[in-house]
Image (cartoon, rainbow, N blue to C red; front, side):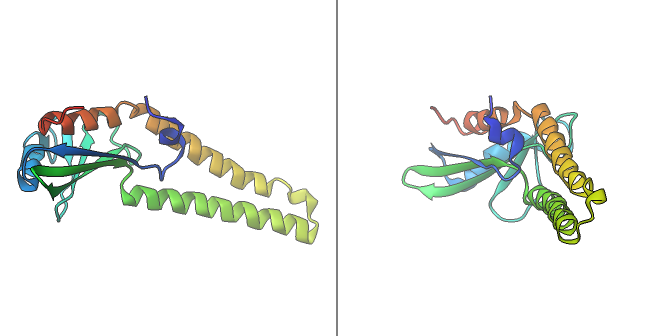
Length: 166
């Protein structure tokens, strides 16, 4: 079961480093074999350039808050060092930063305006900003709750495909 940061922190990353007995290019091929770009396999992958693989669990809740596993395979003596980082894609983290940044800016500006100008009949304007922050957190946590089993699923997939023990 993921910890509280998985549910409430859009910038949380969970890193795992393992060792595989295969060359890095062969590790990437093994991981690609069991995935799909569209539909048809339990694990999907993003079409990206470079050596990183971005894997996700194919499911009915195709939302921007589902976790992705970025897999990097680097040469190591006798095989490969496999780094699996589970978290949101960069675009989703930027979206969360924009949402919370604008809501925080609204809240701070509204609060300072009420205090500075003494317009106490507008006391509820800062509360609107806090409501947007709270709504964003609850929506994110709810969507992550749907994906609560995905990190273990993705890590197990990588370990099974690369015959990693432990």
